[in-house]
Length: 330
Length: 255
Ligand SMILES: Nc1ncnc2c1ncn2[C@@H]1O[C@H](COP(=O)(O)OP(=O)(O)OP(=O)(O)O)[C@@H](O)[C@H]1O
Ligand SMILES: [Mg+2]
Image (tube, rainbow over all chains, first blue to last red; front, side, top):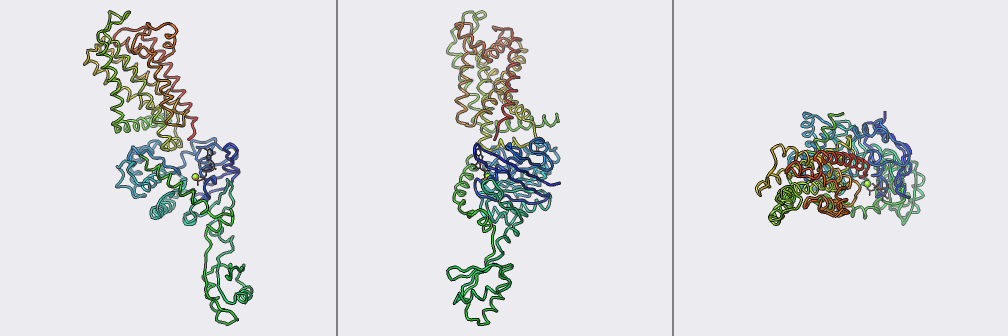
């Protein structure tokens, strides 16, 4: 059985197709990422899977249960960390967890044990009895992750888990996610617009843009679509160098622009010594500089969507600010 | 499954209680208004005798049940406000994705609201003894509590129903006042509705609080327009209808 199976899922808001006929599968125990810019339809996809929004078409099974016909079973199998904060600021951290545990029907013993466990995981034990209103944004996020785990969900959905957090807190959250996936075998579905995050955490990534999945594979395979690593070389005279490099068997693609030559190849770090040898053979040109660049998911994103995710980053930083303001409002 | 629902009702109730106990400002505002009304009116109209009222009963004795009814009405609206706050906070999502019955969630909230109302009702009743309020017998208190419960269940349900249809927390007080002030003024909390001209009185008959105030007055001081059992029946139907309406509308809200 698969953890999640999505077939032709569609959601329209008026005329806008927020999610347009998407299909994918998530294996048990996997960390699966939905990567895309603002408004791509990531949250809407998640909301359909967690039974908060009714799709206009298509079907999906979560842990084997139909999202339309077996809502309660779906809800029982999943934990969620929403994009926007969803804590009660007037209760303490522990009370928020206890409320959640009771809502999910955990007995007293289990509640006590589990609260301790999850607080330990997210390193919030010493803040357990502080009102959530007095938590920092990062602490609130960690508490939300802890809460999502309270009832031993089979699948944990994380909608932009590190949105608006500093690099350090983000790293910590990544560690919790990996630890959790390993220790409790929880399947994880996360959305993000941070390339790094998708690359570091996810076994497979679906790139989503305008409500459609434009690519879906492991980060490594996605990158290899771009033709491997890029070695940029400055050489004089560059025409001569170009002719020589063209004949090398491991060069998959060669480009020349502004006096720089770009070579596409696999395992670029091992090719640099080879280039040095060629340079010493005195073939009528001289290498001035060599630069190796590994493709990032950023490049993959650019390749598939025709835009860099940074173009969306500006509005995102606005959005982060808004999210933080919400967090601190009370 | 049934035990699970009780657990859900309990946890929703527990949360309302915790929040309520911590919100000092709410305590003050909740208790201040009824006391303010009670004392100013009871003393201000001390020398009034109301025609048609049993043995020319004092206005204070006439007023106390009305003030209790008023408190049940106004305070019930907090339950709706707390739903809107939850939506605004994002906390409502946490509740909506939980594998629980929506009606159990609403019953929990309503019972939280009813508990708050009872605390207020009892404190008004006790302090009114200080200004010379006298009841028929000790048993009156039991019946009065029963009336307080049904009145506040009904208006809590109404408040949930309104809140479920609303998106904007700022607009809620406006809509709420649109319901609560007429309900209060037509209920006969301040004067006997028998004195109203017929066309106005017909509004009173449509007002559920009329039966609440009348019933409370009947069981506490032995003066009422209708037999208290009739009042109770009307209120039971009203509160059942409101809880069903509230749960139904709440289960249809999107977050
Ligand atoms: N309730 C709604 N009513 C109308 N339009 C909506 C609603 N929710 C989402 N949309 C629209 O659907 C599109 C997809 O939104 P969604 O929130 O799924 O994007 P996202 O990928 O999560 O973006 P972000 O990175 O900003 O969170 C957007 O254009 C958004 O404006
Ligand atoms: Mg989103």
